[in-house]
Length: 446
Image 1 (cartoon, rainbow, N blue to C red):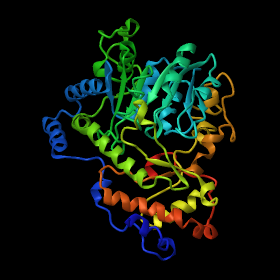
Image 2 (image 1 turned 45 degrees about the vertical axis):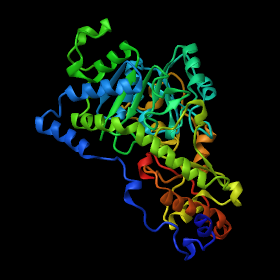
Image 3 (image 1 turned 60 degrees about the vertical axis):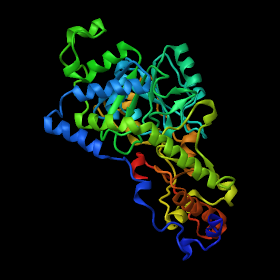
Image 4 (image 1 turned 90 degrees about the vertical axis):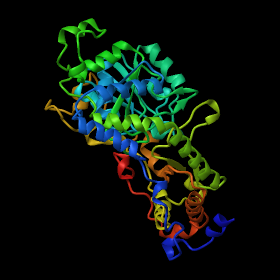
């Protein structure tokens, strides 16, 4: 088989021929934009309807039906949707919000602007998601909400997290920005907690151009989110009686609505999204079939036999097992892959609890770090307190994100991985080791 022959040659890093020299652009080109997307966007522009709500409200209705929930509310980005979700759940001054430390900053930072503080939790080393055990040990009487992130498309264990939250009277906010359309044991992620929020920016698997969506089944939560940042839709007919006297002006002092060009594109993208995700999952399965049994790598994936899936495999990663490759660092492994023509990088998001914004920044001029100023106790977490998260970068690397199914191309990329694996001992003498810090505060740079 050709994939076997290619793996015995000299590594490109040492003068050999790279495994991947030319790749059809389409196999990685995302989002997929068609004439229908362009026509929908131009219609909004030509009507001068960019700041209206007619297209957006149709998009919301279609998104709610697709998501399988009662309400969907569109925002200008995912951060704004998460911000509104926290407000809807009653997060306020002196409250604590539990959040995994391995995530994009938008999962956490909006809590500061509501007067709350953050308590970070460690992750499971395989799923990379927050665990119920980590949540339980961090709950206090001040805990108002838990942000659960379905990280890199892998659903979190919601069947254990939701009952735990109910036991303590805590709201569950699902950040499903990495997992739109994904399922956990037969149910759409984003619908298992109290409220879900997702980004729809152009690098995500589900795209609206730039936007976000809040979803829920609770009318009161939806109305509170409307009152927070949708001034043109904040009217006196909302379900929450205590909000009606404030109708007309957003309680959060922000304008959160989605630009209607994004809503128009989002409607078109939604129609083809599930089929495109099936193609992505087929491609990623084939890639892992090509690597079946290869030492040093394990797939970051979910057991689909239970009715779960990873939607569009956003930010696809592999678990790296250096002990099976004579201790070769993930840094050296990725360097060799890049020489072979594969854009591989170690790590994922860096742990938020170690970033200065969550340790030393005095954002509101309180005379001490905001995270402490808005807390009733010392919530800072020193280095070493969340060991899985702090060490996970050494055990992860990025994968090609195949958005089309092309066996010949995927085989070529898999061959590059096998070539490096089978020649890994040649890399040991030049192994620089891993640097003190790997990964990124945002996945977009990886």
